[in-house]
Image (cartoon, rainbow over all chains, first blue to last red):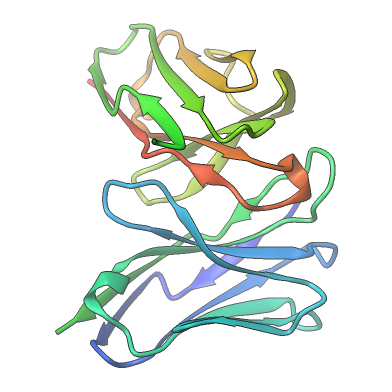
Amino acid sequence: GENVEQHPSTLSVQEGDSAVIKCTYSDSASNYFPWYKQELGKGPQLIIDIRSNVGEKKDQRIAVTLNKTAKHFSLHITETQPEDSAVYFCAAIRTGTASKLTFGTGTRLQVTL
Amino acid sequence: DTAVSQTPKYLVTQMGNDKSIKCEQNLGHDTMYWYKQDSKKFLKIMFSYNNKELIINETVPNRFSPKSPDKAHLNLHINSLELGDSAVYFCASSPLGSYTGELFFGEGSRLTVL
């Protein structure tokens, strides 16, 4: 089955700095890579995703890159703000019948003033 | 207008008891899931239902029994609770099942077994 590794487990940045979270996956057939943000006491929420036919995607201050050859993908947050503090999860799936979304182990991001 | 709602939000109970968590979604999605998040924040799928039919059943003890009376509801019943069952349980739904990785999560039900 799919195995997703995520680093770092914790990340502390100053407000305004950039944050980068990296993930690797094992199943070369995986073709969809979402990122979820989980705020304290809440459920994870999809913030951005990328499909295997795309190398990079951007949405305002967040961007995701995908390197299919190396089987890794990254989340980039620029100009971080205190409200970016949360746990971030990467995930991977080979879309299709009865496929399972496999999550990374999570990164706790702390944005300090 | 909550999209995926779970009850109860908190549940404290003794070992050996039986408890249920209820989940409802008003998004019109066909697929619903139960995920377990342990104290280290690992998210692991337990079950997946598509239009009331069980399609994913991970290696979960058979003390856990999901029930989907209709496609908008997926409940989780747990028999003979053990200390290791303490976790946050998330219900989720998705519009296209396994054809997308886009899940909509509820706010979680924190189960504490004493």
